[in-house]
Length: 291
Image (cartoon, rainbow, N blue to C red):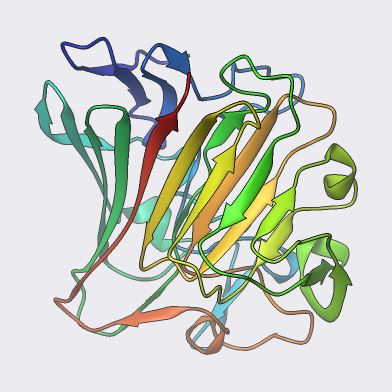
């Protein structure tokens, strides 16, 4: 594994970030380790960054102006090395710009930034997209952090509690990771989803166009991870049972619908960024309650 970049606070909170993929490798807050311990036999990532698409694409390809490009699951940012643009004791800004390799997958000019700001029991992770080209830029981005499940030493039942009541159904993921029109029911009790590994036996739970601007990951024993969302309209929950982690994934976009085979710019959920424009999306994770 590449050497990580360490951010620290006097109170002992710390994060470690990998320049490869701008990936959050470790976060300790109030003495609690929150990011999953890496086990490559189960999953070889801890918190990949998603850009310029989120989710699966049809046949691992996208189409732009009549040409086909081999852009697959979650894009390419998670496997590209970012450059350090700004580093302080408790702050890091990493940047990725287009090159010959990215343009062979995604024929656009861009600057993509990932920032990490460490506070007292909290961590802000922001994604910034800048269109450096001369035509509108279609993009989606997201975060994919794997948190420990259980966390903070709890053996109680964990849950996700949304800020507001959400729909009690999620899309059925079809062959190839595509989003179907069908839905499946989940045991969401108003704003609260008690967590069971069996819910993830077939695939992720994908909450699209949610009403909530925040959610809470509750360990059932007094500790809570509060997740505040800034311009992330979708959220995914995913694990591979019985692996001891839960990914809480803020997204701007999602996988291809089963009936979509058009230009990337026409894909549902893609954002369009005008030349010279800047977009910012962020999540702030805060450990609260009794530890």
